[in-house]
Picture 1 (tube, rainbow, N blue to C red):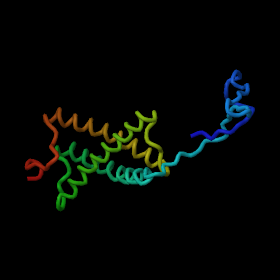
Picture 2: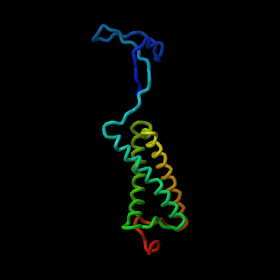
Picture 3: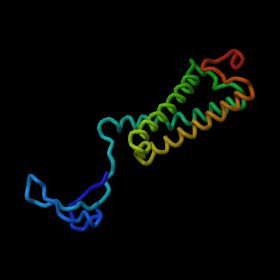
Length: 162
């Protein structure tokens, strides 16, 4: 967001430096000059969403890395864990990364740029990590498909944890 100030020295072209009279007033309009950049704020609820996305992304990307490593080395995803908690964390992690990428793509189509950097640049980092995770998912799943003929389903199978 730009902060603008009336000034006779303008960033506008020389042709636009003449004063224009508004039909409602006799006061001439002077060109505006950029005096500084305002920091974008995300008040109005997006602050909470950004923080949840940061925490979710920072937890999800290592879980996905662990999952992909396990898939590549054993041919199976993560074990279900106690009460299915590890498997649930794995599934939710994939959904979080897909959600962050979806939010990023939506923002890109609406504003022309990705997500804001967020506090300490963490939201931007999570966005980048999510895209890297997506690339790793495509590579490992593709290799798994070409080597084994399929990728494991979302539920634990007997061949992996039977």
